[in-house]
Image (cartoon, rainbow, N blue to C red; front, side, top):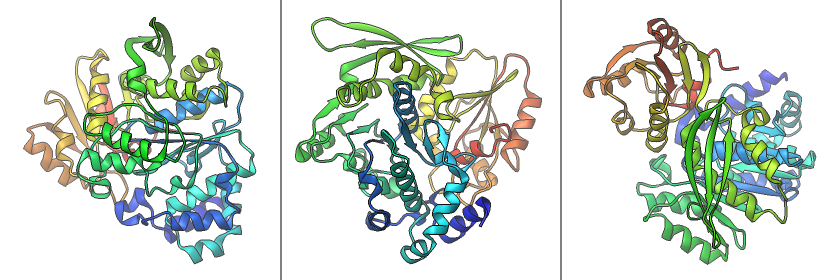
Amino acid sequence: MTYHETIDYLYSRLPVFHREGPKALKPGLGNTIRLCAYLGDPHTRFRSIHVGGTNGKGSTSHMLASIYAEAGYRVALYTSPHLKSFTERIRINGQPIPESEVVQFVAEHRELIEEVSPSFFELTVAMAFDYFAREQVDLAIIEVGLGGRLDSTNVITPMLSLITNIGFDHMDVLGDTLPKIAAEKAGIIKPGVPVVIGEYLPETRPVFDQKANSEGAPIYWASERFRVIDKGVVNELRQLAVTDLSGAGETVDTYSLDLLGGYQQLNIPAILQAVEVLQEVVPVTVEALQNGLSRTVSNTGLQGRFQTILREPRVILDTAHNVPGMVNLLESIRSVPHTQLRIVIGVVADKNPQPLIDLLPIDAQYYLCAANSPRSLPVDQLAHYFVGNELNYKVFNNVNCALEQCIYDSKHGELILVTGSNYIISEVNSLT
């Protein structure tokens, strides 16, 4: 099979969450354990950091990968979903897995695939772990797919677990309260393995404390260790002043990020804490830390996080798709000078869009669309919510038609935001 035939085979043969939603999930770790056992348990042959949380886990994973690459390590990175190419999910030092590796893996293990009948995600995890082990990476940054406790990635025993934050998302799978969601995310905490918590709420801290205590896992509350102040954007880099609150005196360092969203300041404390906790095992110099944060995009290929794709009018893409993510995105947007905001938006059908739409500014102009995915909410249904909120909108068949009209309508000084789901961002033509 060719590469494209191989990907078509996987999509047609296996349940795919980013196309089908929760019904594609297969409960438990059994399939992943079985696949990995057949492959010689590759996940036991490399060191790893496991990153979970509701928002920020993708950005955090990419920043960590960039930092350790700058420190001279051979760094693997596993993330999901992809935007343009399947190979984006599996990288080593920023380079996607070669298409030939994907083809060979599926060809060699097709009988196993059809016998186990794993989900698309389960197979992808096994493929990534096999590739990382064979390539003898120094360190792998592994992003949780969904939840944590029953996520396929949770077969690893990492050097460190990191949980960015807890918010309402995927409630049909993870639970309808913050403590229930936190309990699922806390499932990545392993016996004796240190865990870093980026942000916590009064409802979620006891959940993390209890799980860490029961596992004998040292726990670090990063937001209590570091205070971050946003100093704005200078020379296309987000400037953050970070105060270390430990010890008798406070020290302040400045970091420059090429991820421009103001919300990235929420991810920095956990990243700094994680690097410090692992300093004796995988040392990182101050220079590597600073360079890693300022070169994340170029080092890892991350896209879709407050990404500018056009300067005049300015067009920003962002994959925000839940309430906490949209709150942070809109706060960042307010820091960008503009005379009028135009928003191209589409959402998925398996979540109630009303809480997200309730956040949208009433004075913006909206261009509604749907992605070419069974999970996408049809645009006529999306329009009903905008009518109810008395928002001004136009309807389009796809994101590119919507964006083209939006750019045509725009005047000097106006700002365009494209957001609502990963699937909408992935279909933007100018995203390569």
